[in-house]
Length: 113
Length: 113
Image 1 (cartoon, chains in turn red, orange):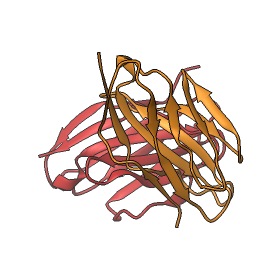
Image 2 (cartoon, rainbow over the protein chains, first blue to last red):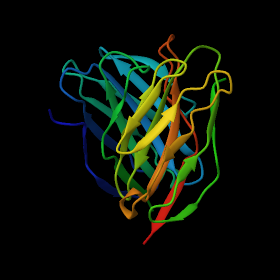
Image 3 (cartoon, chains in turn orange, blue):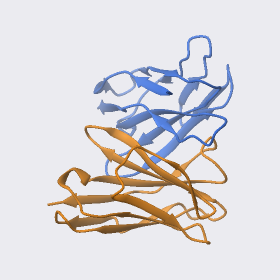
Image 4 (spheres, rainbow over the protein chains, first blue to last red):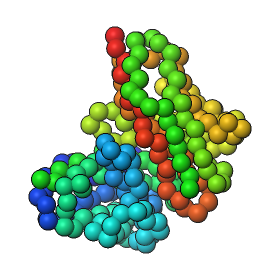
């Protein structure tokens, strides 16, 4: 069974631009969660989607948004990029909800210049 | 709110040494507990998990026992290898409320030959 895939793997943007990251969950998994990983803050939860609905949201500004499609694929968008948005963005999928095992993708490394 | 506390790293060990990485948690409910591992340049991989008190999770020579009385889930391995060098994250997920995974800050392990 294929794992969680994320595209692109690496991205360089400049301040003020926007970016869209994509995540394809494991087949049959309906819950997709997004995390931001930075050296200073560690792993921080962004949001979780299930059946195209945002079910949970972390403490991030409104510049961070996401969506989920009917095939469970998910995208996250960051608008008006700031230097501090440079991070590894990880997507994780699970069958139904977060107390089950979450399987992580390789991440998208975003560098904002 | 829920939280996970891991021992500070980095931890440097010689090959074949015994490894312990301490993890304690605070939770309002009765969580599932996880250890994830992150190799350089990669996403997180599930190492092991436990879902109820006194459960022992094990994988690849690593073990951790869910201790409800001490709210702990310490990771151990009897004989580490150079290939075990990575960052290890302890995490919990509550059984109800679809709350997200809560991670510790991670412990970097370096094993030298």
